[in-house]
Structure formats: structure tokens, C-alpha cells
Image 1 (cartoon, rainbow, N blue to C red):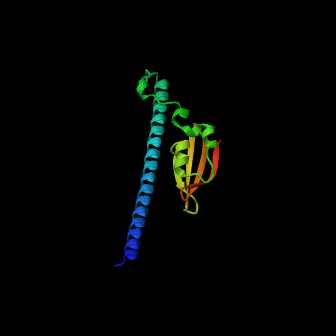
Image 2: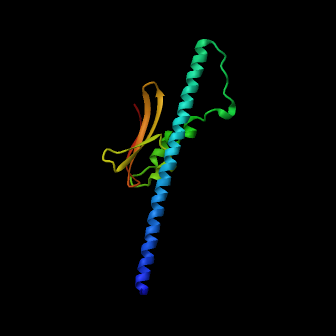
Image 3: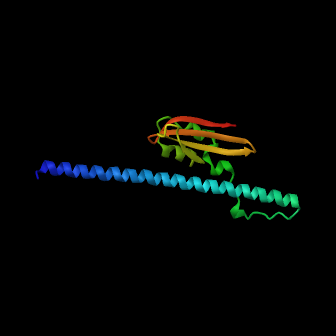
Length: 153
């Protein structure tokens, strides 16, 4: 084989290796986002169950067991940067999905868009029974295409 052919083969192999590593990184990013969503969902369930237990204890007259300081939940704005308007103002169409997550934190949930080619990052918080604060960011090819700042619903 000539030098030109060898260079072309090496370049093709390098391109294949780069594309496989990019796909693996994207898969890892998705797994991390999914795990963070699972943790957030579990934290929310624990908070809800703790609230229900406290309510049941209050109704029954049983003594309320205080939560140890190291297990207290931080204030929502401390643990959920998406609750701060200034973080939404940083978002721009065209920025990467990871930049959005860096600015707002992991979404509370995600889903595929209607056409299947976009992902929608949802940020939501139940304020009261039937009242939600929610916003979303639509991402296509890992780039922001639409921003819906949180509104009370």
C-alpha cells in the first residue's frame, strides 16, 4: 500500500474512533441526567411522605419526631437553581443542553417531542394541591430551540 492510502486508512480509523467516543459520551450524559432525575423524584417522594407523616401525627396527637439537622432539606431555591429568574435569563436559543443543565440544574423530567427528534427538559414544582410552577426547554440535536420560562399553572 502507498503512503496516501495508509494516511487515508489512519484518518478513517481516527474518525471512527472519535465518532464512537462522542456517541459513548452522549450516552453517558443521558445516563447521568436520568440518574439525577431519579434522585430528584425520590427526594420529592421522601418530602411528600414526611409531610404526610407529620400531618398524620398532628391529627392523631402523637408526638412529632423532629428531623435531625443533617437530614433537613435545603430551601428549594438553594437546591434548585431553576427557581431563580436570573438563571432563566441566561438561557439563549442555540446554547447546548449541558449549558442549560449547568444554568438551571438537572430537569425534574424529560420527554421526547411529538416528532421524536427533540427532547423537552421540564422544570416543575408542586406549590399546592393542583398548583404547579413549571417551565421547559426544548432541545434538538443537543441545542436549545425553544425556552418556556416558568409560569404558575
